[in-house]
Image (cartoon, rainbow, N blue to C red; front, side, top):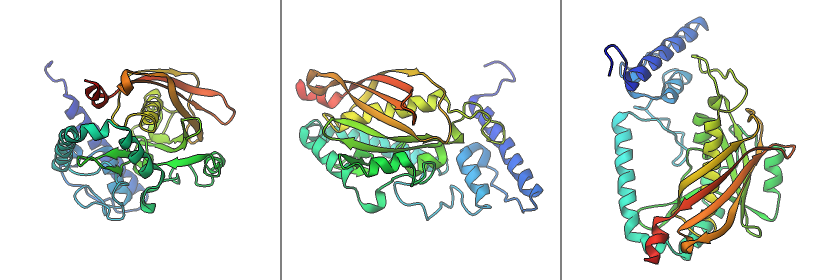
Length: 310
């Protein structure tokens, strides 16, 4: 590394230190007492942690989590040790899945996944309300469509079972912290995953130091993340609960506006190869006029399905 050049961590720490000073200045200019974060905040907290700390006037921090956030709704708070513990738990989960590979590679697993996805505990249901208004016409139309079933995000655990677990692009935490608010519905007759999505200012292609959106459109990476999750999720309702993206091709056809509810749709694109070990999917994001904003094609790979064949 060249002399005097900051590492990525040092650069991020410097920027978060500047953010803290900006937020403190803003509080003082508003005639409010600015909370004082701990010295480690710039080095160990995320931008979301820092903003949450100042928004709550110092009441909520990774060391003192917001107890009103329910399990499954919470986001990326927590100090460095807490995050390392979460990663360690994740490694344990991956190791535990191998012991249940035969079940997870079976049609019984797909059926179990679907039962929980369509009928989760009431407290774990998410049907918009952060970025997408609950009375949004597109969302209400899907909720009232008798041919569709609301589909909650479900993942397997290390005991071979399933649980509701919102992801990077799903659930209230994703909407609050990542600026991505999506709701899925399953069309069983056509075997298609439908839904709606809206992007908040956190996804803006260009943002100022203050965090304000300076472009009224979502960054292409945020749009691609939504399509990746959508095209991966449709496989779970048809043939495999354990697939991961092997290859994805995305076409960004139009600028994706912020705070506009858009339609989602994904489907199995052609044959399912190698007994479900390799699945091709396709999908799109369209606006209220029916214009395609972005589209994608994806190849999903399931190591569990491949092992079942061997």
